[in-house]
Amino acid sequence: MSAGWNTIESDAGVFTYLLDNLGVKDVQFEELISLDAESLRQRGPVYGVIFLFKYPVGEKARETPVDGTFDYDAAERRFFAAQTIQNACGTQALLSVLLNKDDSIDIGPKLQEFKDFTGAFPADMRGEALSNAELIRDVHNSFARASPFADEAQRVATEEDDVYHFVAYTEMDEKLYELDGLQPAPISHGSCSFDEFPDKVIPVLQRRIERYPAQEIRFNLVAMVRDLRIRAREIGDQDWLYQEEQKRNQWQEENALRRHNFVAFIGETLKGVVRSKLVEGEIRYTEWVDEATETTSTRLKERRKAKGGASGGEEE
Image (cartoon, rainbow, N blue to C red; front, top):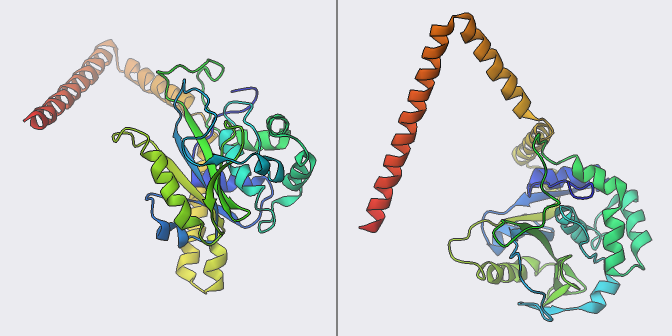
């Protein structure tokens, strides 16, 4: 936990129901497995995308962004909040798109009230207001995985740590913007209409990914789109509607499972198995432990052998 905010996953089902629980209407998220403008467009209308990437810990602040230009006026005209707290960047990225699309999305009374309240604030005060927004924090935390282990969120990250960060991309005022709470202002990537967004955002994402080594594949991209069930109903596609309803059911089941701590359950199960073996007698218990040890040892040897064979093939 970081000042009351837990880590959440970059997952379409998590993001969809997070906004749903905040009172947002007719919005869902779709995971994108390829950087393809046509694939993104087919999910339209597309309000924005959320990009998860490995953050370069230790990178020094820059006066100008690597790609694009800072637009300080947009930070005043539009909703832009500085990130003032760890673990909130996922939800902050969602809100960066959502609260700039309230002309086309019903964001609900609570988020509308929050936007109106923070409208005249500078970016740093908006960030503080967001970090202290009890409703948003509680909904965010309801999607965190249960964990019985100590949380190291307060530990300062080093360059050896794998730290991940969310940023948002969306169209505002006929421009493509990157909204990153760790930057001093929105980053403009040039002219862009709402309809052009899929074509304009893909090259920007590709350039960002190209900054990393070729072997780096730990990225995730989700699109904020209109509820696909609406479109399925509009065109009368009952098969598509059924698939979307099934997807929603699966998301709800997965979200429910995230709230459970299965480590304790596994521990109690193992205790029960051990007790049952002890009832059979000490000799049987010892044989059982020896069999398990031998099986594990055999599997480890096979795994090392397979890995060694693969390495030998590559060296040739």
